[in-house]
Image 1 (cartoon, rainbow, N blue to C red):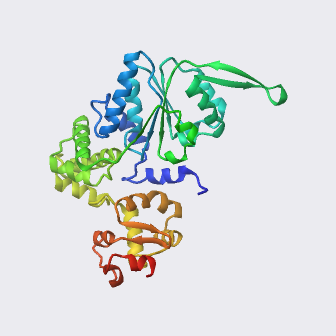
Image 2 (cartoon, rainbow, N blue to C red):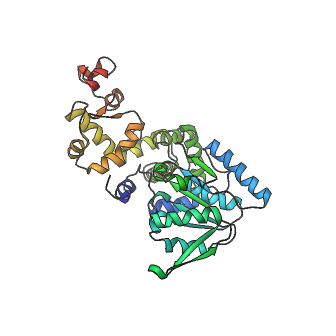
Image 3 (cartoon, one colour):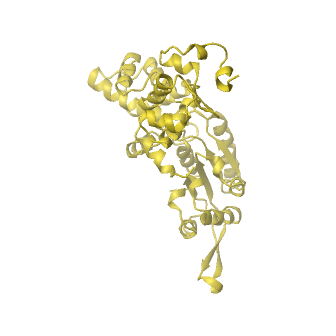
Length: 357
């Protein structure tokens, strides 16, 4: 698909239930981030495996292996990178793939690293190819070749690097070339959180933000947070505002539900865009199948916004299906919007409609 990743990132950042962090989120997250693995909630397997990697490295007196963290935005990849640096008692330097457009950019960063320092490279899959190829040697041999001059007179000057730990984060692990993936000593995939884990996240964040919340209020927010701690914390702040203005400051189930109704986030975590896609699919096209471009026109959004911002969650929730003939609503979508499906879709298991048998 020939379009810039930043387009859907900007669209996601404008949504209350978008997993991309804006400036306000980044400032708040800095205060809410756990400082060590013991404080980190969720991702049990990743925490256990990473703890072994870091403890073994400390016992050897060596730098930790390079770490690759993959998964959807908002699940804690940046937080884990900072925890890695804290556990190794090492400084951390943070940059991103889009910021490294030339091999010289990467060489300047690598040459200034201290021994044992952690280099966090966010969205590593968006790094330029020349910089990516330079990273191979830096990760494996702690050395880079700096080319001086041009043409036949160009010479490569080897530059030795101090041992360091690279922590790469990506939302699209499939876009990483195999030679780069193979150079990471530890690879972890971040999973979406369950409701119980999100409730723990919300209670912890509420304590740090000095917000009063009971168990029912935390459960209500957790159920609308799309399995993502970043969204849970953002919803918590908006519900806090509502509770302070409209109630006595205590967040209960009723207050949380009323607040999120104001912000158009329903009980399943769908917002205006999500429901707009489903309503168009159900009311205008009888549940589909319908082409993506046609559906986008009906919603009044760009094709890419529907495909990259709205669809992933709808598919994950089992409300929409992608088929060779187009997008199709599932029975759960009709039930969620309290609509009655056409007789042809309400009978059988749906195979007749999908394949025309």
